[in-house]
Length: 108
Image (cartoon, rainbow, N blue to C red; front, side):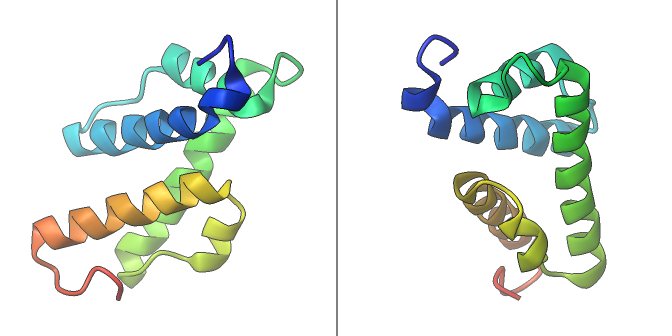
């Protein structure tokens, strides 16, 4: 993934969103070193400090999920700020979590 970031960018996005999803479900903090590697594979490169890239990614996803918990729906404007594949993975994870929790229509 790190050697060929263009080829594996989609995989990196999937891994990143899965890290957040599974850590949240387990009540654990994500592995910062692993997230830094994902951030580099997503093209953040060496110019951006690893910690700030991780914090920005965490803050964005956390804010989207917190708002969704309050409103019952993902904020499409916020999702539009993410790379499209990452936004789609977040939508899929949200829908799966809602379906699993039995909270009705995952598209609401």
